[in-house]
Length: 342
Ligand code: DAH
Figure 1 (cartoon, rainbow, N blue to C red):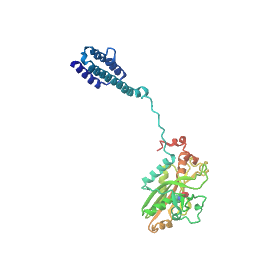
Figure 2 (cartoon, rainbow, N blue to C red):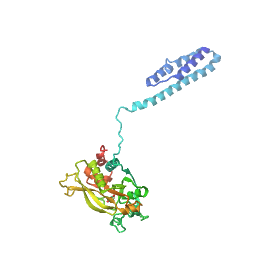
Figure 3 (tube, rainbow, N blue to C red):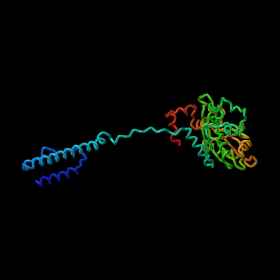
Figure 4 (tube, helix red, strand yellow):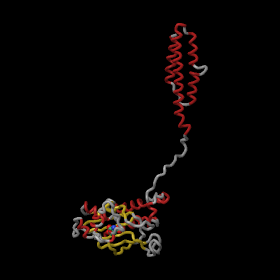
């Protein structure tokens, strides 16, 4: 009888260690142990050799053994179906479902290009708040109290506190920079600006500007021209011609607007350039002495130039987009045409 007990103990350890990674291996296990000619049957058959006084004891042992094998078989079956399910239900060789990704916005592409050109000339990027006070947006920039730009028509004032407004130009960032930095100052300020305009193909209530400011000893109008000329060539290519026209801005004296030869018609005349061959791309000038004084910068020691350009306008010229509303409609079919352009 001791031999039978030993045999069962051996079987038990063999079964405990058994593994089955495929349905075939599970079936093999079943046939070996639980089949009609299996080992469990063979062990049970030994019952008849057990003496009558130990039948009860062995009945229990043999039943436990049978139960042990059956439980193991169930466990192997379950484990195997867990392993098998992903393989049989999923085809790992199928191409994946693409996750649609957004694209870089054309205005951001152009803004980044503008910034990187000026960075190469040693300009640093400066930013300011979109919600401004009257002083930084107007007063400090030498806009007189009765200037038309302050008109409620153009400026969005904050309802709860009319001392605050949405900046109407990035020139407000000039004020913020002069407030905190001493010359030499060389900054480029990209940002969004707001004006109370009726939305149409040619006007929007918000748009984007890039402001530039350079203050040091001996900065001249020739420096301004050369800087902007370099910018235009980098942005639009070597063949583009530029011209400066005298203009007026309260914060610069003298002031000039810069035109470039029309990229659409090459100067021969079209709708974009209103048949003049030229398109205006920015305002500029020498920083007004009063503006410098507003920030304790001595105009007898320091001079500077400033300029401001519209990002939409430059994007429009570069990519011939003629409706401003397209930039804020989030139509991916429009936006994705500009990817890969950097
Ligand atoms: N702030 C002007 C505008 O919004 C643009 C501008 C003109 C900025 C001349 C300047 C400048 O810095 O010197 O129309």
